[in-house]
Amino acid sequence: MIRILYMSDLHLEMERWQLSVPGWRDFMARHRAPGKHPLRGPLLTGLPEADLVVMAGDIHTGLRAVVYAEQVADYLGLPVVLVAGNHEFYHQQIQLVQPALFSAAERSGGKVRYLENSVASFELPGGRLHVLGCTLWTDFTLHGDPGAAMEFASAHMNDFRLIYRMTTRFTPENARARHERSRAWLHITLARLRAEDPAARIVVVTHHAPGAAFLGRRKGGIAPAYASELLPEFQQAAPDAWIHGHTHFRHESQFGAVRVVSAPRGYVSHEGARALDFRPGLLEL
Image (spheres, rainbow, N blue to C red):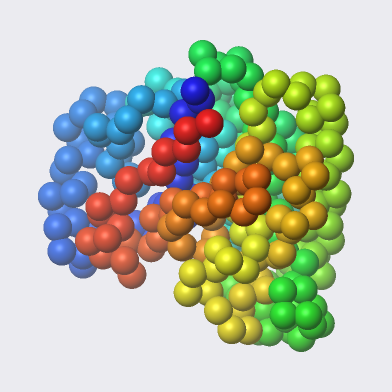
């Protein structure tokens, strides 16, 4: 059996040393007790045994996401697979940050594997595992009118104010183009791996959600910015599991042959005690 700890939407960029959250000071004090434990983020003590950690985006802005992932790898003694969310690119130029994330992960010496339209393969006690990762973004077609959805997102999503493309702002059209490239890459790579290595387990990790069933509270006009309806077209060469983030909706679901899971922490300042009690999910394959 392969055991994967998974989490997303830790939003470490939102943390402050003195947040006005009941129990915050005691919570942070507990981070300092267990040796190498990271000084920010959720408590990682007493977790079940696992082979791998997956972080499905919105961990921290820019290269700080890799720094935190490496701290977790050191503390838990496990490799970490990291996919960027939209918040990793806030106040950044996306074309510059993307290769820098790859380089920072490479400098970890294998502790952190950063994925964007790429694969990390592992020989684990429970068997071979291929992890396919990308941010995925969205095609904005969830409600059948991508033009209206892109216009709504442009007016209401911070992504299109706070992410840059060199001298211009990142746009919904840019996001949709990136989604289409990732979607095509997933189809090609899944089909190839299923043909070449049928005995291996395959997990897809994306930040954006692969269907409307996993939106949680993200309803209405903003919903197409959070998910694209993908799973029906991936049933022929289906992954064993799909881990996502972005929607701040924790669930363990089944769609046909695919297990779909998400374990977001959310904003500590908004979630309060619920965020302090956060525990990563455990996926067993």
